[in-house]
Structure formats: structure tokens, C-alpha cells
Amino acid sequence: MKSWSSVVIPQLNSSIKFSQISLTNSKTLKKELVAKKDTYRMYVCGITPYDATHLGHAATYLTFDLINRYLRATGSEVLYVQNITDIDDPLLERATRDNVNWEDLAHSQIDLFRGDMENLRVLPPAHYIGAVEAIDLVSQAVTALQAAGTIYSIEQDLFFKNYSSPDFGSLSHLDKESMKEIFSQRGGNPTLAGKTDPLDCLVWMAKRENEPGWESIHGVGRPGWHIECTAIALKYLEPLDSDATCIDIQGGGSDLIFPHHEMCASQAQVLTGKDLAATYVHAAMIGLDGEKMSKSKGNLVFVSKLIASGTDPMVIRFALMSQHYRLDRMWTDELLIQATKRVSDIRKAFSTSSVAPTTPVIDRLVLALSDDLDTPTALAALDQWAADTLSGSSGGDAQELSVALDALLGLEL
Image 1 (cartoon, rainbow, N blue to C red):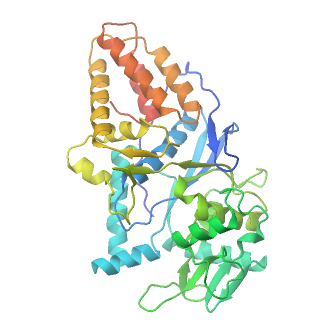
Image 2: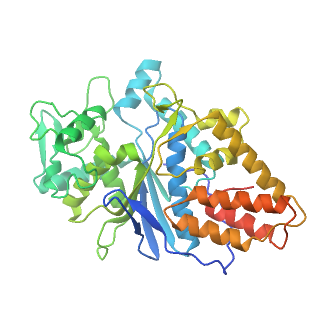
Image 3: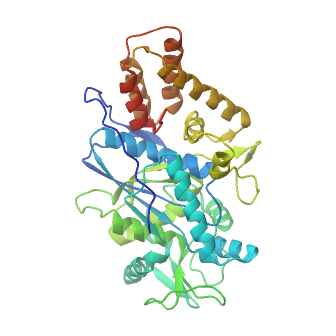
């Protein structure tokens, strides 16, 4: 599938010293240094395209954009892959509700998503893979899991035994009853008759009446959600036999920790004998008016609508970075007003004939980002630089700082 347009990353000053980045690993619940490598493999779960990009999506993809930018700034390559779940129950249900063709709905929302990512200056993945184009990959992965004795059928549907992986449950840190409850809320069916275990997950769904299906060795049907990402990650990130884990970073929103990422990891462990990722990174949730922002509540704030109403995409990006990625937080009009004022002051500072010293602020920015993407501290240093500049301080290089903001924070100011 076509990704979105590439974003040019300007060349940073070679004198900038980069610290080794640390990120909070959801599996260990600790902030850990990310091992230095020439090439990093990062997989981030994409959207199910039955609605436009909301601010929760945007916050998640900005988080991994910052990781991508920082690792590249250190001189490493980043092989970044993202899927798009362009066939799934929610998409079909929305298409039926709105009396539209499911493919037309998916394509329209994918186009909106691409535009939102371009406007927010998010670096595109090297491979942007839809579930529909990964049917063969999924079929091959299911066949391999069958060979390992971890697949069984209920009627014509195929299920994976998650407890085939001795590590199952170690990512989410949940007891079994909690997992069953969450599984039932997020697309699972723990009470389905015939299951070996309530937490076993669907990997191949036989075609239902009036629903699409694709030919495979397993019959006509479509992929389960979790196996889709497992198969795509293992194919397009090309894991090295010499690495201790399949990939370096697995990411998404915190609502994906269980069941999605837990079950992807269990499948990968059976398929490869390794943990899926060295580091599992999860962005927190965005709420509105005191409630979690979700499709079911109907309280989503869409990026495309904000931009259409005249909001500067760089203000949206700034506002989302003004709080830490791991902090569940609320989106408010006041947050947007504050971000607008802060961006305006920084732009005023850049427009002056001389600016405050820039090397110290770049150093603080780099140090903050290396410390688990501490964007609030990074942006506070930028605010202080703007205030110093507007107060008459001089001796800095505006172009050098502009390049650093572009390359590291994705801010084109």
C-alpha cells in the first residue's frame, strides 16, 4: 500500500552530542537504555480505517516519530513498518451502518490519514502494509503455527493457543480474570464454545454470508487481528538471526498492550523462539472533557477537522508534545490556546535580528528527548529561549536552532 509523502530531515550540526536514548519498556515497567545499533527495526500498529485520524491516533504516531527522528539523528538507520487493518469487523459494521461500500470507506479514511500525517510532518514508514495485501503472509504464518501444534479449529475458524508461549502474560502484567474481561471488550470472545482456553485468539475467520473473503490454504476467509501484525512485522522488518529479539521496538497506544501486543508476542515466540521486541513502548490515552476519547463515546476530536477550521498543524503537534507521552491526559481548548501562544512567541523570536544563545537550548533539547522523550522539558527550554530572545539576549544562531527543531521535534517554525 502507498505510504504518505516523505519528509525531508535537515542535516544537524556535527558538533551536537547525542546521549543514548532511554525509553520506558512496558514489559519490564522500567526506563531502559536502548542498545546502540547501526539499524533499528521498529513496528507501530496502524489504524483500522473506519473513521478519520483523531488526536489519540496523532499522539501515538508523534511519539514514534520522535523516536524515529532521534535514532536517525544519532547516525543510525531506522527500518520502520506500519500496518493498516483494512479489513476487520468494525470497518464492516460502520460500512453497513452508513450504507456504503466497505472498500470505499476504508480508502477514504486511509486518504484522510495520509493527509493528516503529512500535515503533522510525521516520517512515513518504509513499508505501509494493509491486511488485505498480507493475506498470503498470514496464511503462511498460520501454517507454521499449525506445524508447531498450536492451532485448532472451531467449525471452519482457526484459533491460536496463546499459552503455547511460556511468556504469555508477561507484557500486560494482568491476571487471567482481568485478561478475560479486557479480551471480551476488545474484540475477543472468551466464552466461545469449543475453545481450549478462553484467551485463545482467532487467526483465520472463515467467510461469513455477505462479508468479503479471500482464498487461502485454510479456505476462503480473512485474517484475525493479531496474526496480521505478527506476520507483517516478521516479514517486512527482516529480523536477524543474530539478534536476541525479532525487532527492536514494538509500539502503539497503551490500549494495545492487551490483548493485541500480548498476543502478537506469543505468536512470534512460537514462530521464532524469540521475544518479538527488545522494547515495548506505549503512548497514553487522550481524553476530552474528563472522559477517554473513543469512537464509542462519540467524543473524538479529528485532526483533519481541526486543520480545516484553521488550526496550524504545528500548533497541534506542539500541543500534543507539551505533555509526556506516557501521561493519560485531556485535550482542552485551553491547551490549544496555550500552544498557539507559545508557538507564536517562538516564531517572533526567530523573526528578530539577533537571538539568544542557541547551543545551550539545543543541548537541553537533546538531553530531554534522550530521557524517555521528555518533551515538556524540551519545549520549556524552547520557551525560555524565546523569552530571552524577546528580552534582548543575543549571541545565538537562529538557523542552527531551526534545523534542530525540524530534525528532532518535527517542528517547522
